[in-house]
Length: 212
Image (cartoon, rainbow, N blue to C red; front, side, top):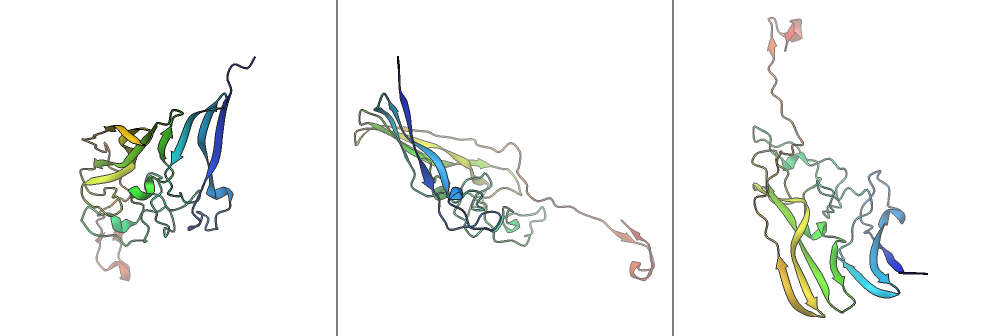
C-alpha cells in the first residue's frame, strides 16, 4: 500500500538576455534556464512553498560574475580576467586596466536566492541577506565594486535576518551579527618582480656581453 506521496513542483529561472556567453556567442534558450523547486506537496497537500528573489541571473557561462562566481551586473565584461586597474602593486602604482569589473555587488549577488518559505498554515519565513565582510590586511586585496578600504565585501552571501510571519503579521525577527571576518590568506592576482641588470663595456648594442 502507498504510505506517502511526495510531489516536487518545479519550474525554471529565466535569465537575462543582455550579455554573451564566454565563447562570444548569444545564449541559447538552454543557457538561460535554471531548474528551481517551487513547492513540495505531501499526499496532494501543500507542505512547503518557496519564493525566490526576482532579480534575474545572467545566462550560464556569463562573464558578469564577481571573483567568487556570483552575478554582479557587469554585463560589459569581456572576459574573466580581473581588471589590473583595481589593484595596487607593491610600489603603489597602477597597472593598465581592461575595463572588466569582477567586484561584488549585493543587489545582483542576491539574484534568484530563496527569499520566502511558506507553510500550509498560512505563516511564512522571509530571508534577508548581506554580503560577507572581511579584511585582507595588506595590498593586492580583492576589492568589491566601489570600495577600496581594508574592509571588503564579497565571498558570497550570508543571512542578515530571518522574519517570521503569522499570515501577514510579523511575529518574530531573528538578526545575525558577524564580526572578526578575516581572509586567512591574501588573494593576489598579480605578482610584481624586481630584476637587476648589468652591462659590460662596451655597450651591449655594440657587441658587449649582457649580464643578468
